Length: 416
Image (cartoon, rainbow, N blue to C red; front, side, top):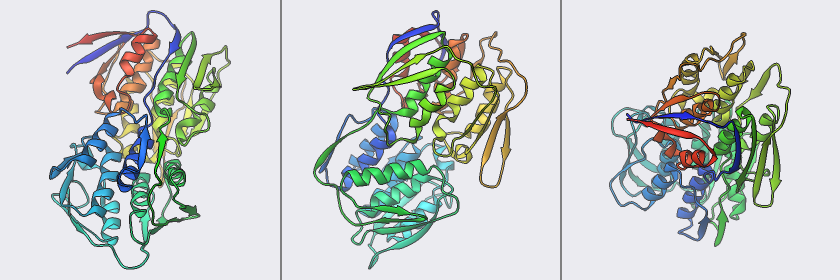
């Protein structure tokens, strides 16, 4: 396995960083464009592995469609292929085959899709056998406490149903910001959908002929903010980002301001800078609307020896890895011991003892096939050299990350 040893000879960073375009927005627009028959054009599509894979699978005529590690990819693709009804088999990596799809499969069956589990009930692979649209306006109930991706997938294909679709959300709604993102994109393309309380109504219709530009990705930008927070000084421009964003992770400037990173909006992006700062004695935040930046904050706060308490982490256990468990295991290598509390509808993560990070032995961090583990733990190299296993896993969301880091001054030594 290839590993990278990372270090920063100079602790002051200045320059321009091109982050990836949002894969969350890109993947939604790809499905909506496919439903529109290509009337919807997409400008500045993400180059993230998940997006490249989804685009290829939408165009593929092969019988078996393998989404790799992409949770969003397979869930959006399954909904689209289900309403198209063309026979195929949907599958993915070993980890993806462990992630639940039963709520989405059951919902699609109620909408007229003929779907069968190929191996284990409730999990991939799933075979699409055909589709017959039900009479009248379909309404169905679905649990919203497992994955917002199920809800978004149904919202998008609802526009392709003859009478549209009404969804009734059961249980606690997790990652609501991603459902809001889908709703706003539907509005942008002319679909008058609405969400009131626990009901989402999707009228039938397709995108008007138009072009939409994809925003830069706030999740990816969180790692640049993290570097700035740990640097002795920083001034970095990030093109393509908007403070008024569709993305829930656009809250990162608010969090990082507490850690001395200021944000200025420009006509073509943002400028961030490290300012002298008095750090908080304790950091507390709810990540329910922005779970993808929890790892970034956990690593940066641990590096700064700032105790914290996070909640809203329930979805992290069913990502590319169990991210709460992975954070605890990997940060323990630095002498930081986190504690998880598992509640009925939530997971809390706490750093609540007097601790001090220790990177004197260049710890080697496992990434668990999870791009966000590699990206987050790379930030510790600003303090001292660290080793990252399987560094190319960043292809999933930020393919150019290592090249962008080299431009800023990171030194990368390849270990074969």
